[in-house]
Length: 572
Image (cartoon, rainbow, N blue to C red; front, side):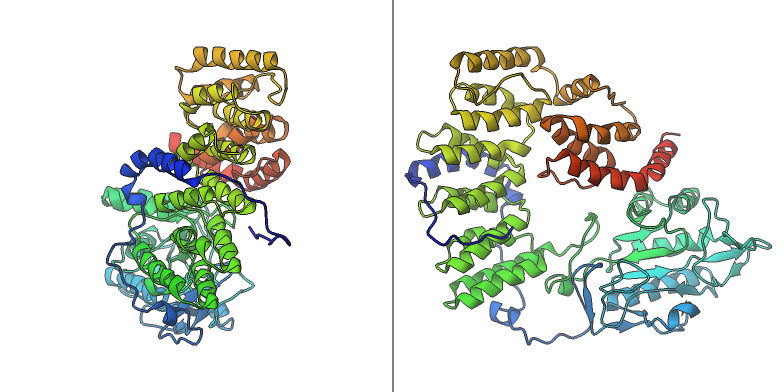
């Protein structure tokens, strides 16, 4: 979000911050007691090896490879090189002229390690390697990723169909779900050596593996073999997550696509990981915290350029602690441009910590916060969907000192908090809040219950409002004892969609169709339901049914067959 400064000073809310702050703080104290792990440890003895001036020095030099950005838009400096031929590996001939044998030092080390491990068990094995990346990183025409030296295409080990003996993979060969080479009747997928390679890669003690992309059918062959060999359940569970057929790319039935996460040094310099955060991988959160704390010291520097550069660097590394720095120090900066930049970053990077949320609340109630700034701060709370945001918003709605415009923002803050215990509180607020606030509260009520009443909440008729409240009270008396899941199911039944208990993937087509014809609360809950069923990220701030229909139908059309087939296999 980019904030554009008004040509004239923005109007300000007039309020006494003292009582409001006390009310807000009292509301969150209990929650903070149970959220200690979410409070950033500024007091912890974590130190960055560099001070903020060195970090912000654009002429700083680095030793060894440096991966920056994401795997789809990053770069690579001082790349490590994989030789065409090695003791246990060989780069596929048609890939050699491409000059794509460069990666991070960790990637090159891991490839060599995996190849050596397989050779230990099966002497004479040679791992065939395709694209890794260019020497300076960046785009390659054969893939959408491989930009930052953390991706590598690795050919599958093959055996002869004639005698079962190992055969050097001639290329990236395609295999069907039974392990037969497509177009090569003389070769098969070597499940034994390919499992040995996968096992070696995902159990490396120092280098993590985020993905080993592979087709669903070949993945099942590897996991079945692992079970037959008596591998530990924990290893099989790890492999079942890392071995994965991608949802937005080709099925990978011709090679392993190895992706590794950022190293510690690279991560705090701007290397960016996407996708899942496996519990057994070090994602360098402590190093990011130490760097963020050090960069916060830049706000004691008298030069606004240094303070601005500190914010820019935090954005570059996408530190999860950026909202803390921005909201605790940045939005209080004496320089208007620094304040604006800090608020922009706090809004752009999702926050999970209580520190950031409490800082946003304190910023909201400050007397010198402008209307525009307050709107952004409330949006930060809304997108968090956190109980701290809920308690604060309810406190602001209760306060007689809060003006109408802010009460609308407070009501809107509840928009992603789908807690059943809010229902009676919202019904009570409908009785005494102004029309514009009632309208926002009713929208939240509709979302939580997936139900609506035929009431115009902006009506000036006291009788119409009283009748609407009575309708909601009767609904709550009848349904309040039920879990929210039942409310959702009952609502979908009214639209002809029955959600089975076992595999809800079978109704995804019906749910996607609802996005075009359902009312706002049904569209919202359907979007969330699709996210839960498919485990795909969904833009919860988007409420336009047509836009969401395009988003979901485009993805589902490409993945329907694979996901339904996998669900069927899992239930067999």
